[in-house]
Length: 367
Ligand SMILES: Nc1nc2c(ncn2[C@@H]2O[C@H](COP(=O)(O)OP(=O)(O)OP(=O)(O)O)[C@@H](O)[C@H]2O)c(=O)[nH]1
Ligand SMILES: [Mg+2]
Image (cartoon, rainbow, N blue to C red; front, side, top):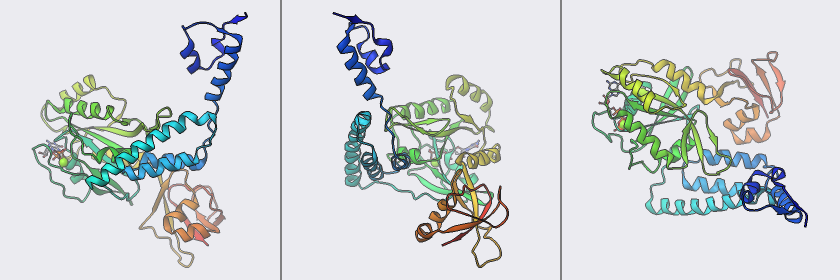
């Protein structure tokens, strides 16, 4: 019988599976090679699928997660190349159904509506200064106190930056054995997380490590940029800044060194004092930049001047149609064209809905 070494031609998964077992004969090798080609067929996922997947990452409740997963399953092209993904989605759907039923029974499915240019969630151990940070950068007056677990449930506030508002969500602390059940959903749906560390207490570093250890035991993780793990449908990474706080405190500099040594993290770092104001301005600006949005001002066709008071914010790369959708669904449906004043066009140029907008462009929408 003809026996050949075929592994170099096989896909990695099947090759690994068979490697070290025995050599294949020709018929087996051809079969395995075909099987592997089917397994690695491109999935050709639709726009709708990607949109549902993006919403899934932003979902803040099991019900929303379930709806997105179901849409992803509906949208996924049904062929051999997507078998694995379909099976994963079905498994996630049955888990999400369970979670949704549990949340309904307990009656604590918590929803914070998204507001402003983007959402930032604060994370940290007890006393890290999360509420002090909220008090410093927003008009909210959360309770700030020297004892742990002062904050009992997530609370939204708005941070002004230039002429836009950013939603900042204060949260209860995460410890080795406690995490508010709503916090993970909020982190998954956030545009940015801030991980605060207490530099005024020796236990601050351990408490930071506890937050990370807890999150690493879940499917909600922190990273330099936001992304979904391609091999695991439920695993979601949220863009995060490391924010060592209380740099004004005695020995804070030494603890900062220890933090770098013992908890090395690949995150952008902003050292602050929430109570004394040090480092807050660069952090506020970096927060806005991290949202990766552009501001667009609208002008009514019958008015001479645009409305400079209230810009709309859309994701960088967004277009005229996206602005119309923010204003009203009828406008979005019946949009004919728009006039633009801003970058790369002559003032008042007529454009279609797919025209990509730049920061501070002025748009006049026509139905
Ligand atoms: N020296 C100093 N103390 C701070 C600073 N920020 C917060 N604190 C103090 O640290 C303590 C805890 O602050 P909080 O803002 O309540 O901390 P938290 O992270 O919200 O705490 P929990 O709600 O329990 O999770 C309070 O006594 C604050 O006065 C700071 O920048 N410098
Ligand atoms: Mg607090």
